[in-house]
View 1 (spheres, helix red, strand yellow):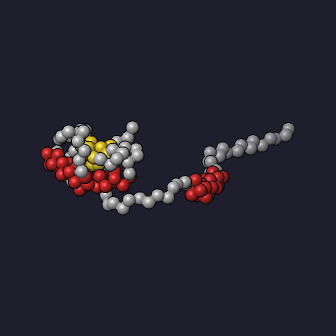
View 2 (spheres, rainbow, N blue to C red):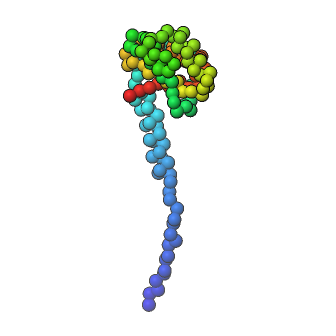
View 3 (tube, helix red, strand yellow):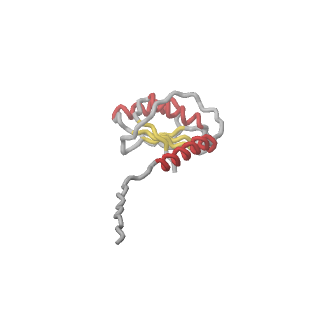
Length: 138
């Protein structure tokens, strides 16, 4: 009789990850090369105004609006139909913030208003003591 050997192979439960590492390295190189090409932008001259980041904490905001013609309106403490100057905005907002220092101040700017006017308003609001200044969008 022929004797058969019982060759039992041991099961190998290990996964060879070297091919996966090779694929990941190739993908990494491809993304590193193509990512700078995908960035598109337009050169713009941004206004030079210093400002700090803001945080959102208040539930009842004070809203300051800027029209397309560059007029400022405050909806609290007066007639919201009455246009005020930028200096008046700063003084009125500082008076309001003296009673509630953590009040959130929002800016509603018309879509055709000059960007620099909105940034100047935000800086005045921050200098008036507003802990948070945000932008309202639709």
